[in-house]
Image 1 (cartoon, rainbow, N blue to C red):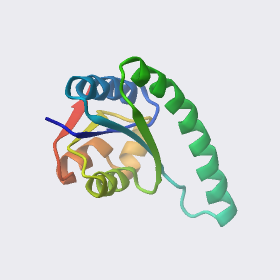
Image 2 (cartoon, rainbow, N blue to C red):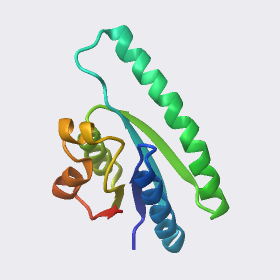
Image 3 (tube, rainbow, N blue to C red):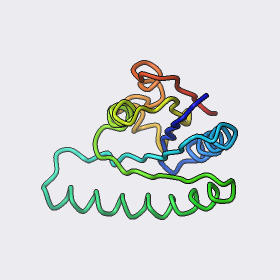
Image 4 (tube, rainbow, N blue to C red):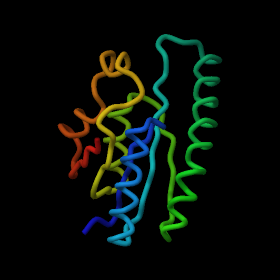
Length: 138
């Protein structure tokens, strides 16, 4: 039913749960599974600060991706990972459209209440603006 599944991943407990649901759906349907994380940049910042933030975030996400890749391999699923830069919901929506994703899986809440207040709920924006179905996992 779903050829390509995107899991939004920020390392939180909810994101890990979303990954497991996405993995289960991908295993059942022999779907391509993509996990994407988004580096949200502080504003304003100097070029040096922004580059350092991006590199540090990519390194942290790659460490987390290793664990996810192991779980996917155990299930016989090849996992593709991406690190995007910008506003999380906007980047995930654009990426899902560009890649022709059939389903987006996300956790209900991300890392912090303050971030959610500051930039809005990523899951809410995905539900409103994604071109495909969105599964929000508790």
